[in-house]
Length: 363
Image (cartoon, rainbow, N blue to C red; front, side, top):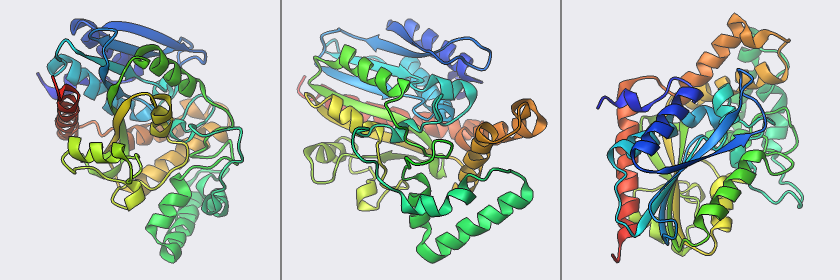
């Protein structure tokens, strides 16, 4: 089967392919509707597919669309798995969560309906928020109120100078580490749990309350070499969970805490929240992060999209400028090429097969 058939053209097409593949595989499918409408005014949904006995104690879990515009990759990987690799022993089950941030996927945004980065939202909102001093220094240049060639060039020069002075890793942490002071800015972690966070926590509670061993893969794009899927493990390096991840994936993992990952240390990531929600289970998890375009291009696309939704005059979204910004955002998170899709699916299959092997251990 050609690899492109697993990947949708947009959120609605991706959703239809997922639901068809899930039903063909014999899964029970349930939808969770987001209260904010999609671009056509209609509803957008997170879909959940369950394969296997409902009382299974060992479960394979996948999540797509944590960052909405990155959902093409995760959705295609889930569909490919459901069509070609989804058979498991009767003692195991599978939980596939499609488009956990459906609003972002439908609107072609990385963030949720409240401009919140879901992967910075899993934080205790009752405690003082961490301060990202680097972001504060760079905020006017990361999130300018105008977006034209001269402004972009001026802002890029400031970011380049920051990297020259402090290093590229420091620039990355300043930009993407998460911030809680600017609701109209990029990488904003929110001031309360989002609908997507609450929905994910509800799904985990509903489906995994009896689970004792869980392997979980969360799909992302935008960091690292083109087409390479880095298994980012945010279990702390001195924990049993980290050691399990090393064993499950044969040491082919990366850790932000050890400086071995394309990602930096972040605040409020969903895998931390998942670990807390599944404290009753033995959890082994990774974020499977696929490279797409050079980091400056990805950051520029995010900044342009932020301007489009935070500062652009009414009607700009449907203008030539708005469409160009959206096309660039789609490109840096979803290279629409078969060579990239083939690399994505191959790495996903390897990652899920290894996770299944761990889950089956002892059968």
